[in-house]
Length: 109
Length: 112
Image (cartoon, rainbow over all chains, first blue to last red; front, side):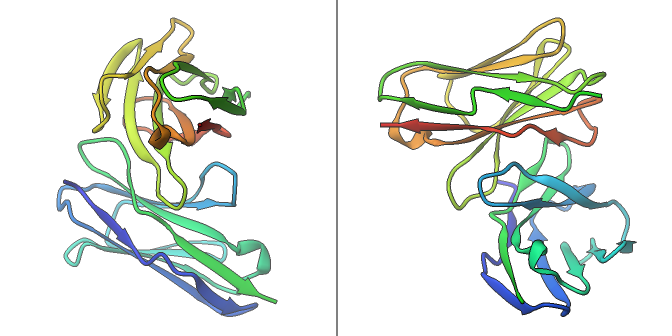
């Protein structure tokens, strides 16, 4: 059973701080890693993907991948109240996307 | 470019009934994947259709079935509804089976 684990939270950070979201996965054959943001009652929205070990930056978001440790993280710099949402980690290998349960982030103004 | 659309937005059914959910893929996309997202959970893969053929299935019973049409739109059918089928059903389309998936707004199904 391929699993993706996330801390369900809630993770509360003050406005302007760095939010750090973590994810581990069980399938060593996983090839692609995705972070989705999901607002309450809405569908997931892709914000970052990463394929290679290391860091990938896009605006205020940085995804980090360590395949040896089977670990993916998402950093959100200068967190804003509008970043308050559930963040889903998803992993793709030889099967379609496997999602974690998500981490609820709350940015306090 | 038209995004992924789903209908209906909300649906209420009773146990034992049957339901059909619909999804129109994004223009140029030939692959549709369906997911079930229960409250407080991440989306779970139901199945994927590629060029009108089933191309992978998750751990769901046979009463969950699907179809993809020549225009690449898709249906999800669920027979003999159970209370635990209450969830947000998400459809995602992609350029190919391995491609980036774009999600529709979802259909909220409530089974009473």
